Image (cartoon, rainbow, N blue to C red; front, side, top):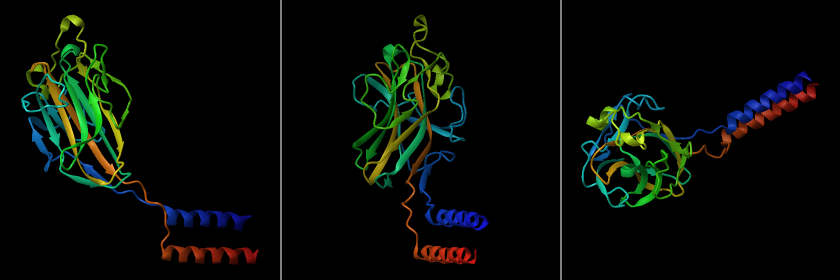
Length: 265
């Protein structure tokens, strides 16, 4: 009985050593800004501030805001986009099956009748859209993610539907509109923030890609909105376990030892 117990423990240890793989990961952090990224309009990095506390990744996060935004941002081209900002990553390469994860937090001082919107999408190296990762745009009921009247998203958002935390818009990147809200008479419908939301996406095809984060004012250039994001990780699934020749030799020696133990019983 004692020998059988020893054999079980040794077998488990050997197979664990042989078949445990590690997944590679690439991470984007914003402690030192966003070197290599391309900014259009107004963007920056910040620590916990107002309703946007430190991200789940900790430390500083990146943001884009309509405060000081450029008039050349078309967003999704619905018509009525006045000004906004985008931030695009440098080109990165992935393999099919690699997994992308990040967090975002959307804050808007505008009401549903003038619904600004924000997004993240995946572009190829020629800036063609490959996938929409999330959208954020308020409805009169306050549901914000995915954004109403916007295309379907291709990633998984957790939680799946996100209402605004209403009447709270204190965030210094919104400029003079921080803490404000349009349409007081209608109980500030559409104004507030989402809190941090997780996004997960699996790459179907290997290739070179760019991440784009953006926000725009819609139907007027008043009452700002902004988008914070952080914790961007691109990871490869653990490889299928294939024991190396040396490991196989060790396994063989271990099994020979097991046999000797059993013959001595």
